[in-house]
Length: 382
Ligand code: SAH
Ligand code: SF4
Image (tube, rainbow, N blue to C red; front, side, top):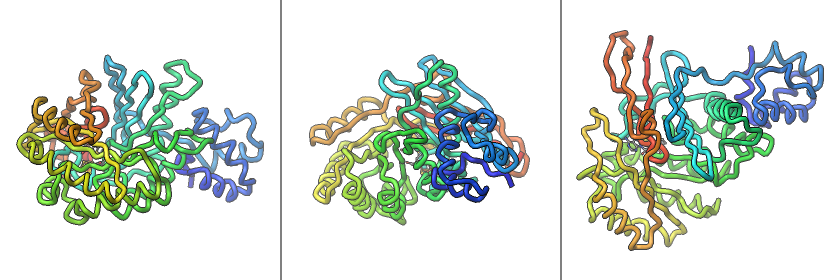
């Protein structure tokens, strides 16, 4: 069987080289060719031992995700849709800013958590992405953009796991991908520039603290359990107090400036001044346990099936002021890439369901980084 080398972190690649009867240290050269130079072809790897170069083509490949479409925004935001087989499509978004380039990556096709305000949640779970499919999004975007910008040095300085899926429900495939992002022979990103966003898979937050303590963002969305369980069903399993205690442990194990709490502003649901005060109280109580929190208010990107509405800006600002007055660092997400439906837009496509019935489905994925609403059109069972 041919191994896709995008599936391995450096340790894994060393083990693979050993299986081929090659010295482990050869893996470093190979790894650098793949991730630092974006090589797709073993012939390019001129300084690689000849014996290894000869073995590789029959045993291995370097295969990124297949592009379905690309959309370029006037503000520079780029969104790709990738076909990962069996009708599943995932999305990746590049967001350029003056001081950074951020890539928003998907971890699953669909999502099993089923949050009410998230169209991926409404769509249901299809499958976990492999390490190669997670990392392939970065590999592809970095080297495509470098070529286009005519740059030798890196274009993507930050990665956020805020695309489709719950990254901590795909931990075993996520971890090697994170390791390659941080590896100096890979993308060399600092731990603070790689963010895992989670709806709160408590045991995996603890694992991540031990294995690879990158920056953590937690999708909170409500200041009390009743409402949070309604919005984020996983809360029934891991309620707020347990989640915030895990966050405090995370910070003890891996001191960060802040853990970011994401809070999607839903009109009349979680956006009332009283709820802002509850949130202040909650975060202050946990500060005593070592938690330092930052809040990111996200204007909701509506989609019809949700039955929910976006809070108006005055409501968002009033909510934000209560947090700020209490000394909590609070930001409101801005919108990018509107013109390509990567920001607060949506993509509606003709897709088929598993029974093959043609349906008009607004299959949207919304509300990612920077107010970017990224969208996934999913063709199921075609
Ligand atoms: N599953 C992970 C990461 C992907 S979702 C998580 O839930 O954290 C990334 C962010 O987008 C989360 O904060 C999520 O709450 C937010 N989001 C999802 N749907 C949204 C929508 N319709 N409008 C605004 N934000 C949304
Ligand atoms: Fe899954 Fe995150 Fe969407 Fe919730 S918000 S359904 S956890 S992708």
